[in-house]
Length: 454
Image 1 (cartoon, one colour):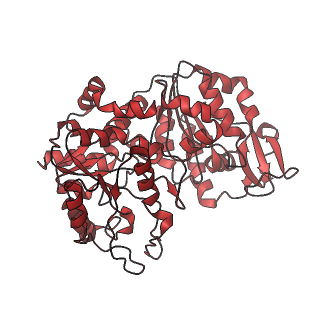
Image 2 (cartoon, rainbow, N blue to C red; image 1 turned 30 degrees about the vertical axis):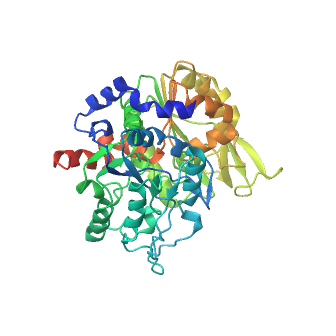
Image 3 (cartoon, helix red, strand yellow; image 1 turned 90 degrees about the vertical axis):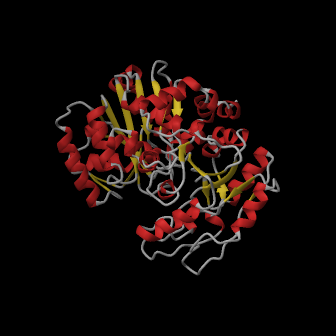
């Protein structure tokens, strides 16, 4: 059913018309002449961890675009990043099976019954691939001759130019553009301004794929959220979410925090000391708490927390429950690993979720996989609201929904009341800017049209 709905994305003309009207400068794939063209498609198939695919959702979500290109006579070269093979401190790029696209290729070949070729390049020790080498032309020739059905380039982050700046990035972007006639970006989740997401648009006619369009359409359901609008955000560090938290505090009717972000908030507001919460996070949280005084009652506090003497593991006798309303300021805690499910029995919290008309979730409330109860209770109470539009961010939010509540996850994929974004970070970036135009690759597509690259 999911497969069919994705295949039919390009037939939804009214939806696509709405997206186009939302910003009529965005070049759309349905405007491109694809017949006989080599089409370089940037996707976000970053679903491999240590060589294993844990959830193919982001792969399946691109099928609409891939089928459309093939149906219009185009030939596809795919590219994605996988993981973080580059050490930020040393600059070393590690090429190994853990960040290879091969598991993605195997999945696509088995799922679609096609043959995909991955070109092989020379690796310079610790420096990854320095360039696109001429042997790729042999693969392109086989693609044109129907000897292979698609080409999948190696992990874009194995190339030194992908995350580089200036001339090095431009050189790699130009090399990528030299492989194809048309560029399509269907990688909403890959929001960083890299060679394969932004640089290549300077050299090729560039278009937004169907998944990109659908994600932008659903972003509008956040920007134009029906009130009451409830946002739930969690994370491992306060500084990575700070700008989006300020934006949501202004926009949402209620804001719920989870994870280490919530722990930092508790330290800042109540003077608690919680293991694992860094001083810098508490400092940022204090600024946030002070700022939030302008919006009294907006932040919904989860009053019951789970403290553990052991980090990560759930060991009987080594964890306990606390009601923060009964805890003295300045209390010291070991690791606070989750919010207790009984939080969602509180009348005030029940009312917040049951009365909402729009709910945005980018949150895993506890330290998974051993502290799951808070996240299960959160997803359950959200699902109990039949009137709300429920918008879930990507990444861990999506994976944990599938792991903890697989039935709900499957239902959500085909429900008009739910939408699961493929990129949670991209959604938060757009929320910071209050526009999809705040995402660099989308802006690059528009600028490509303005500069006449079509």
